[in-house]
View 1 (cartoon, rainbow, N blue to C red):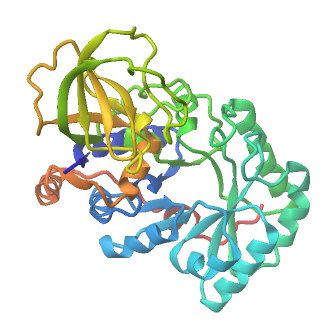
View 2: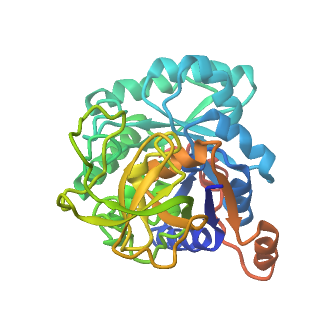
Length: 389
């Protein structure tokens, strides 16, 4: 059966590396685990690595966390909506928000649950996803001051998540100025600027992120090592935390160009490369992963001589070149997944997920060495009354 192998040592390396970058910047960070789709063994392993601040955009995934060991701080990343407010307050320590009516409803729900819910106010900085307009910031913030069961942690932004707006120091300096404006206007200190996601890491490594930006929401670069601005892998990170293995069910020498008349009416877009000419032949392998399972175009064969030719609902075709080597039916072909491919595979029920090394062995190894400490953001840094200026 197809499987995803999850390399815990690679995850440990990436968490330690990113944590080192954050400490050098005197910032805190939260691990965004959306891509895991609530996979409990991996969440438990992350906790064993010392991760205590986890974010997700699905309440079902947050609901899985208490079943995976010690309690952790939880962040809800999808904008809250009215039918889910009870569960958001119950399951999430903090959430990202833009609508004042939603925040007022969160306050009422937190009062019913006898708790305090924390919020980060998201500001539109050019990516055209969520965010209030800067011109409305003062009036918006003033309405929040009377709320008793909602605590404003600070302001934040998303960049590079929808429209491809590339983060730059000017965006981040603007955020810092908005924070200063609110502090001066309302005479109390704001704890944080949650500056963004993995797309900010290249700027951070170039020392171009203002110190006022003191919180990050990082997922993609930890799980895949991705450089979301320049492409490829960020220097110092590993890209081998997740490997997809698919079973070979056929290997044959065939024409590399379809025979006869073709149509564009296939239900799935073809990945057939254009460089082959009529009559050209080569070996092709068929593997048991298809568009029902994942975004097949996001699977890159680990062997550089292999090329993804196309996929239907249940199968993918791999060009092996003029010689299949030692591959045979029953073997597997291994792939590196993109974020889009990985999240669909982790969500699916048609593929096994295996942690390597075995979690028990990994835990024993950890007990002999110092573990990473990714502490709670709120409890350690922000769970204090707002200080007056």
